[in-house]
Image (cartoon, rainbow, N blue to C red; front, side, top):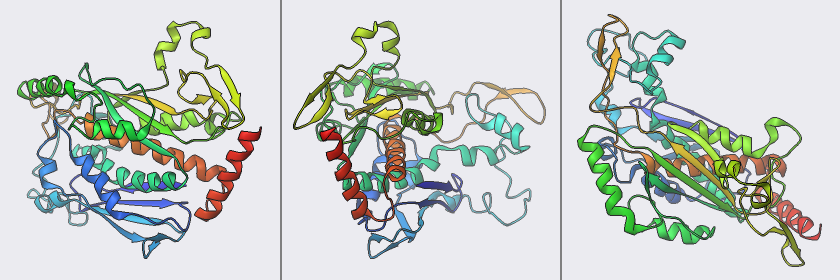
Length: 388
């Protein structure tokens, strides 16, 4: 299973193509759009979300709501393109009138400067339009399809916010996905302890007034994965490596950990390794889950637990000093419309990146041409593991 996205932040649309989704999967388009709506929500979002009302249009690979096995083509329109038609016209040549929004003062922490250096762009808008997190709208649409495939295979997952700008959002003692979903649905921060909402709202409000931004920490939990998804055989076939690469590819993510993460480096092995048990009903289990459901690049049957660290958004309304790439004079960095924090939608985007990667791994391990056949193979594999 592979996917590709295309499109710019203020271009006409975002486009996505997925290959390798099994035939026979009934797609719930309303559920995809519900996830897109969640991506636009969350405390700390900016004015762009008042313009866009993201809805997916499926233009290939699906007939009468059922996947056919061929490439699935998706479109999400950019409503804000109405205000940028001349500036972002794909065909019309550049003129003084349609290049009024040139960017020549790169933002620290963004792709602006290094992207311009790499590709030779003198107008850094060519960089920021594609490197914008607007691209994650299509990634959410693709991930929502993958989540529906995983659900058909009895695999569930959820992403939530652990902290915002150093302010904890509470811990959860269970790995039950339904319980976590219910807890995070009670507030606009996707945290599990709603009593922390006022304090985090206040921190976000303080940052907004200061023209500053906040990052945070995200956790994703996935359940129902059988042991042995992934491989120890090669570096590129290790599932933890694939997951880390997928999550690190998301805008502003600067760190990924599994289970107890960096904390395991400070403890002796006897308190880190997850002891093995067995019973006739469940087969092999672990008494703890310090390693986050992964051993040797493979799932071990325990819940998959992934944590991601997101840096603050680099667009500051009180911008840092920069250098004009034409004059080489010190000037304040360019200011683009942005959020005070995007940690809430990022928790959904990280969840979707995990969903996409897990779907890819399962499609690689089982026959991905037909859903019913894939379900039969996976059921047989689960029974094989139980009797091992």
